[in-house]
Image: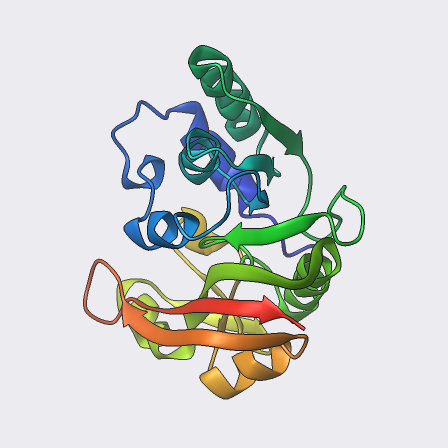
Length: 218
């Protein structure tokens, strides 16, 4: 069963993007860490959407690649980069098969992305991130906390289709598989990395817990 299907929902969202959605605004936490990267650092925005972070990276003078499985997202990035005179290597592709050589990047960002799938998809995506990062390179991203599951169940009925992987009724993004984990499980998944920062944080609403990650490739 294919579980990394949420890009189908997001492609419809990106087709309607008009610059007003929160998904089109760069995260301050991402911009803060980007400011610590040296000029010309090679960075990958994995699951780039319409390019909120890829474009910010390029404006900051970084060497940027962006990948997403949603074609309307990649088209939006390409168009925005052309309008601004920025260079971004924007590619259509899946997070489980990154079209880049080993050690290609100094930094990888994947914000609200790699938990879209079951544990097999997630493990493959993490292995791909480790592969394309140079040793000592950094990874910044988010994962869904298991503490969030009650919030989702309060909004719509759901079921666990495999270990830690849930789908919820009601349509939208959560109709596609999402992976939720504890901190201990997260640490096991990211065994190829040294943690710099790990925080379980609520987002927009009470109970909307996400793990925020910053780590170094061993």
